[in-house]
Figure 1: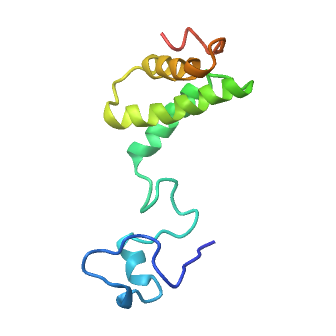
Figure 2 (figure 1 turned 120 degrees about the vertical axis):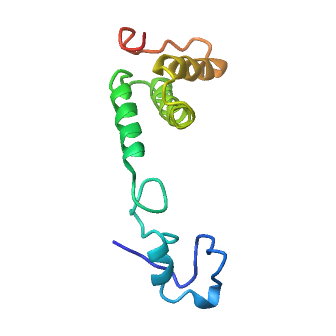
Length: 122
């Protein structure tokens, strides 16, 4: 389902103004307006690099099981931190990100015992 509003939600390209915004078609062609649900990453199509990164992270998350609230927070922190880490350095080991995620949770939850596949994260 595509929804276009009569005004732009995103910054206009430098050579356009609100008066040249006609039914969103010109901006849509330029990739400045994305219909709802168009892309998980905002404007434009997902590229292979992002798709590969998501696949790699999803594979890692299979080795961090769901569970208690804190365990699910570990999964969420690992997911977000890993996306950031891979965008900066694709060679960074998953273990480094997992350790940082665990340390972040343990700042508030001193007795948190993480559950994860220790063989996978070596």
